[in-house]
Length: 359
Ligand code: KG4
Ligand code: ZN
Image (cartoon, rainbow, N blue to C red; front, side, top):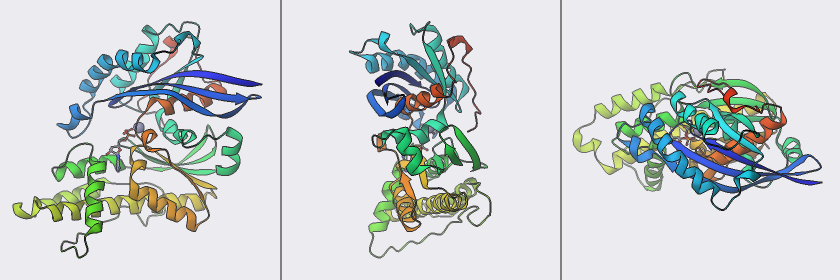
């Protein structure tokens, strides 16, 4: 029998306020795939640009202000009584921001009789790949699992083995800055805007197109040759800072220099991410590599992962660009699986944030 489960999802863990309605389509109790009915968001990027990163108290205030409007936009023309499940990010993330979403579910939504599912944001970034193409759970498990999963964003750089959906083994993570944070911080050093990833990537592309670049810069690849699966990006940031400080003002502001710096920063970050992910995939005998998170939108990373996956006969899943960055649709997808695992709560007052939630 065909069945549709309507999920309303809320994401407020960092600087994006997002609300989405996702439909989980089942046939004979087996997931056939998801359909995104709506996925609305309000980004605070411009507000935080001046700080070069996210300022928690400010982010909370903005979530509080924006959530009712984003909710309205996401549910416009939709009968909210049809919702079967509420999904909410409970961690990891900024505590005041997480609570804004949780409180909204507790106070505002007419959900007294409906179940709420607490969602792990990192797991959701990886499960966003269920929105890459219509794929059922059976097909996903057969084709892609076990997988080496790489969650890369402004807040996380985590590598884990995915045995099945809901069964994860942490392989490694960053010991200091996340990959996205490194993009953002080095961009700030160079005087580029926030978020830094897309800007560095744009300038790097221009450098790659230069026929005979006069400037060549070389930075370390942190922890590249170590046996573990951990990452460390703060050394790269410091190397970029010292190098930049040594430049004469006329060089430091020049186009070619900024392009050369961006190119090397992007190459260094990508080299480490790709090498460690590939090593993990081969060592844990994965069938696939699955990536997610804001940095997985990076074109060079996508291309390099594609090349390595092909070389080693691994399958590869990358989210569509709109589902790489923070969004509530991925929270809806993860909630479906959390519900299947019995993680839903009947009283939303039982929901708690968990800012340091692990995978
Ligand atoms: O997943 P996300 O939207 O938020 C967090 O959960 O942190 O990721 C944001 C991060 C930022 O650090 C941003 O610079 C990075 O993703 N990012 C990129 C690109 N697009 C976004 N990094 C590299 N290349 C990109 N194209
Ligand atoms: Zn995220």
